[in-house]
Amino acid sequence: MIREQEDQAWMRLAIEEAKKAEQIGEVPIGAILVKDGEIVGRGYNLREINHDPTAHAEMVAIREACERLGAWRLLDCTLYVTLEPCPMCAGAIVQSRVKRVVYGTGDPKAGCAGTLMNLLQEPRFNHETELTSGILQTECAELLTNFFRNLRNKRKL
Ligand SMILES: [Zn+2]
Image (cartoon, rainbow, N blue to C red; front, side, top):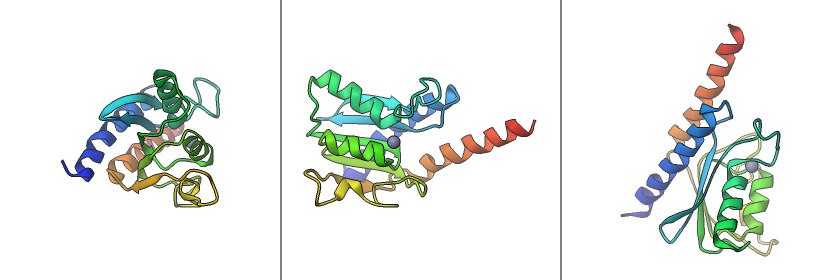
């Protein structure tokens, strides 16, 4: 399989995580961590339910992977996430030494993997990730636009 097809297949699983968030009224953002062709961590946004501003999909997936692998370093892992990481998650990605990040759609308000700044590839830090963007961009973006449209419609009623 060429890498883009492989990336799309994993991103579909991150989208499944995002849909779990949507089902419980959370903003639909999902993430998975893959090591050696196997999922070692998964997560979706739980900010509202957990009353936790740090419960972003990436943070949840990173915590699960570290627990599962018994390590704080995620050296050979690839993180797939539907939305471009924010500064907090980009920080956690660098701290956990994730090898590669693949995201779906950019975030003009908080994206720190190339949109507002690029914390994942900052040569002054002690770790830089490989980075791929725009995988299943339309699907990932539509999740969010549909969610916010529905929310607005509900509020009108
Ligand atoms: Zn984040």
